[in-house]
Length: 140
Image 1 (cartoon, rainbow, N blue to C red):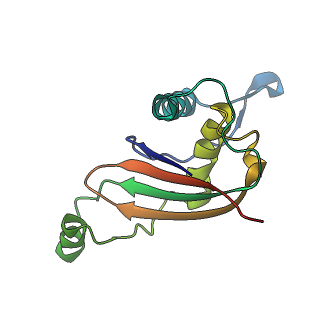
Image 2: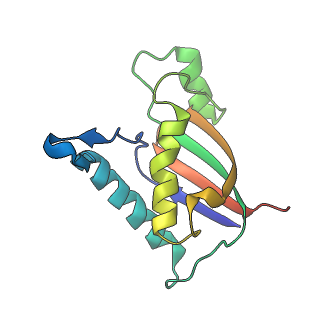
Image 3: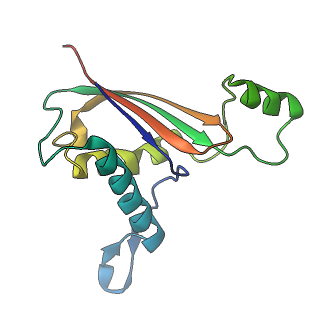
């Protein structure tokens, strides 16, 4: 099992853009976000270039966002008490997961993100934006 806490404001993946001459590129903001994710993952792994997971894996991911200023007082109290307060507005969970899965692959946590067979993910509000990740071998 591997647990990571990435102190970063979660962001969804940017759509791939097509420029003149049909060249495909990603926005600079997305590239910087992916680089930061990779750095945060690498700093918590504390290992050399060895792949951690070789079989099927399951991810438990919690995306924590700063609450909006217009959030109801009762919801703010839940956050203060540590009770989950779920975010049911954009961004979509699948778009949040794409850059995280890519960064984990690039940092050799697994060979390919196709190894991820199950994801349990939530979007919640917290006073400290972050991404909490638990990765485990999937018992087959």
